Length: 194
Image (tube, rainbow, N blue to C red; front, side, top):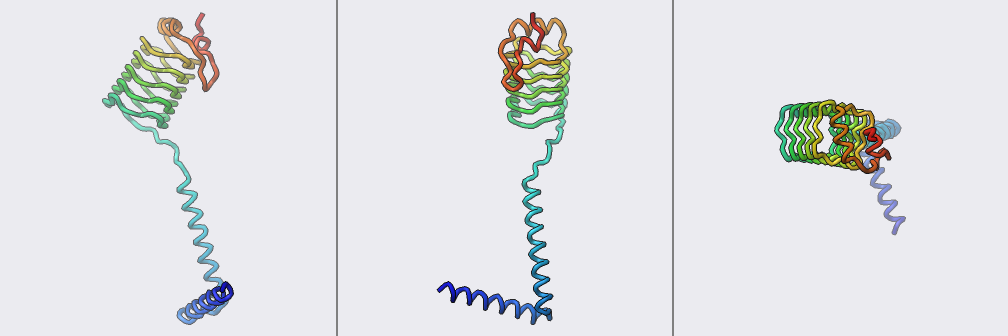
């Protein structure tokens, strides 16, 4: 049975090639070259599509300046280098987001969820982080000179190289505890608490 099918498919293939040769006036060798080129183009086309489909472009910086985004959900997003200058982000959710290099200059982040976020090299100057949840956040290298942290939850937060006002640093030291699971640094040590 298999032998008959193989012979049938061979005969069909030969018939198709003969028909193509007859229709296009090609010699058998030229026909074979044409088929090889077509298959090669098809292969590289499919490979190109797979490569492009599998490629994830880097996150584009977004501009949310002066926006009212109360209770907005940005959880789990890559917002690298985005800007939220003077935005109202009260009670917004940024948990597990990459906020590296983000500008929150003069933003209202009151009661915002920033748990497990990467805020390294972020601009937090003049931002209001009152009652914000910064549990296990990494703020390494952030600029927070005039930031208000009243009532913020900072358990496990990493404040390595963060520029803070001395009075805010003292307030944070009163509630500082825990170790950051990402960096392995103790919160009190990163704040230089006595």
